[in-house]
Amino acid sequence: MKLYRFLTGPDDATFCHKVTAALNKGWHLFGSPTYSFDAETKTMRCGQAVAKDVDGVEYDPGIKLGDF
Image (cartoon, rainbow, N blue to C red):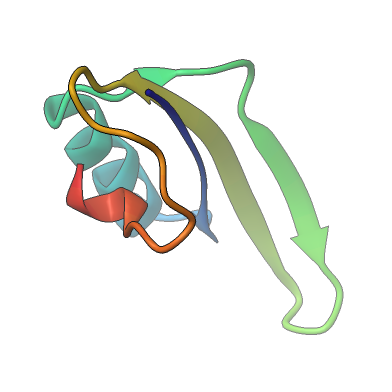
C-alpha cells in the first residue's frame, strides 16, 4: 500500500521537527515544500508532502496515517 500525507504548520522549528519525525519513521519527501502567507493570522505557513510504501497492509479509509 502507498500512503500519502501533507504536513502543514507554522514557519518555525515545530514544522521542521514534524517533517523530521516523519522522515525518521520511513516517510519520504514527495515533491517540493510550499510556503504561504496566512492573511488571517498574519503568519507564514509551510507544507510538505510525504509518502511511504507499506507492505502487507491493505488500505482502509479509517486508518490513521500518522501511525505508520
